[in-house]
Image (tube, rainbow, N blue to C red; front, top):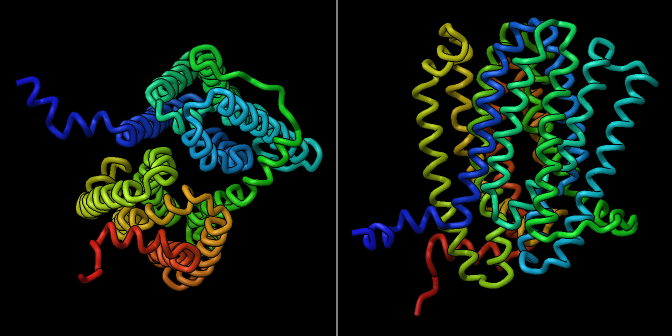
Length: 438
């Protein structure tokens, strides 16, 4: 009986490295979302709505700066590590380079914030909160998620992430009780993450026998130069995905802004599905591309069919449950928010269309094509959202965001067809079968 169970495909699925990667990445994101949902009412009660808004404003500046700190290593790091998994010496050099580069960038980002605050007098309402938030830049620099992804050992880092978020929650309960303590909120978030990350670095050094080499500035310079296009691609994607609310603020009243923001936040959580799948399959896809091309295309085909099924199910479910979701979160049936959510419900499905294109661009290291695609998407999104929002308000912006997902899919497909026909036809053949006649 036990033998029969163990031969059942489900047990093979659970042992599949890419599926394990995906499950642990979901655990990381789910714990992040859950902790932010639990901490929200606690913080509003203890520091008040005004200070809570300023804490979030400081956090949004840090998130933008973290794109600089990450500098595309979240995309290039896993591929580099996956290809040299067995070579401890090479791994040590790659690891030392990336950690040193990110630490240098975190120091630069901190300097920029300090110059902005004390030199130029920017961020007037939340200067102290922002300065206390810079610890988050160093927690981003020391986060070895990219390394564990490449090694396909995600279990430890997902547990560590949950633990650091629980430490943050405990810190809020114990230390944050009055509005003037708002400056400590992001400091606690950064401090708990940084502490756990340093323990992970010790684990990598002692348990995985990865040595830390003294940074060579020439290597760091070359590494940053190689990743410049990935950094600019990430920046463009950030603007495309998060810029909608800023565009809407020029054309709509605060009430509409609030309604759209609620619907968009739900959609952003759902839109993580394709991003998580790409992160999960990326290391294995990189190895297969190097060693087994038919296996690579077959792996992409299976992934694509499963992802499209999940994306379709998620979008249909969200469309029909939109009134219930909005009422649960807002405690009242906000008609406009329900309408926005029903339109945006199809973002996850449309975003899933493009996962194979992005994976192929990543494993073949076509940073320049990713860069082109990201900025073309960004320009289209800005023009479409300004044009449609000025005419149709929030509904126009929803349509602009949907059309952006379709356009980026078309751009990436055309780029792959033009620049790498073997990849294009190899995947088409795997997906639709051979069209050759005997």
